[in-house]
Image (cartoon, rainbow, N blue to C red; front, side):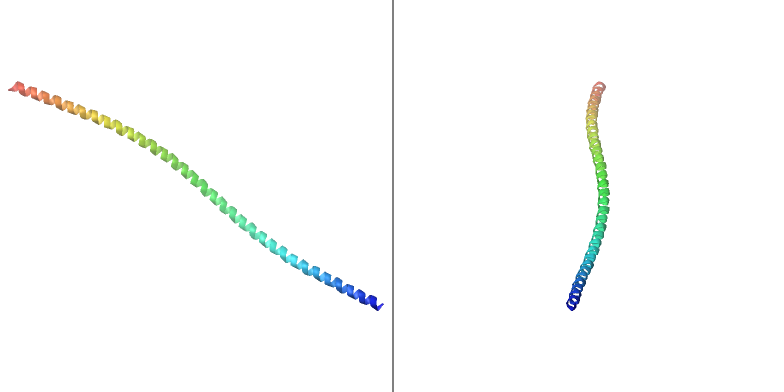
Length: 122
């Protein structure tokens, strides 16, 4: 019977050692799960921060696109206005040339009248 008691004690010690190993392993796994949970929360916070930054970048990009479109419209208006100004300046140049020719003709005609008047006086 002494042998049986010793065998039982040995078995109980082995069971106790196995339970101790399971307990230690469970504690290690709990620590690992805790670390994984903390890492997951950190990753979630970083992802939320990145999402907020991406949303801000999108808003800024949308504003930049709107500003570029307005600038493009203003540039097209500038080209149109510049072309109209060029046409107006060309038309004005033609009118001044015609006016200069008329003034020259009037001066020439006036000089002819003066010449004729002087001939009739003498």
